[in-house]
Length: 161
Image 1 (cartoon, rainbow, N blue to C red):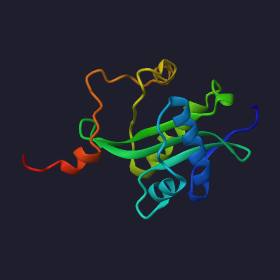
Image 2 (image 1 turned 180 degrees about the horizontal axis):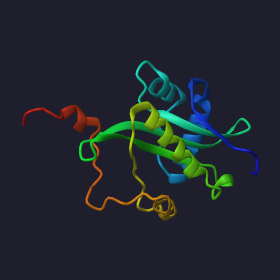
Image 3 (image 1 turned 90 degrees about the horizontal axis):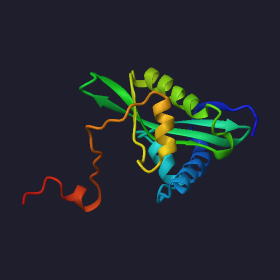
Image 4 (image 1 turned 135 degrees about the vertical axis):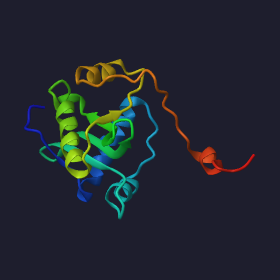
């Protein structure tokens, strides 16, 4: 695909495009994809948005997406952006679109909440993604362990034992 690709902030009318792109990412990674268009619309474009998204378009087709949220680091004494999802369509990979999407995240998060860094997670069994992020300047955090609290454990937190 050698069409011109434009990147812009996604809006409510882009929910179906975001859903298709994020499903393609989940399929590529072998992840379960539970988010529906309704979930994305509510979380991204409801009364209190939980994320922002940059969408890369070739004509009317989404060929890339970056989904991100604010976070704050007391050790850095500044806000940042957490990129939870970054997807580039197979047919346009290798052309710099991933870095263009990350630059759009940097610019928007900087303008919106003063973000001075980008943080993300990458699966250890995805060496191509790890190499991409390292080439882009990201450095691994070997002194941290990612942890998650959800479901029953989340419901029980704070209960006395």
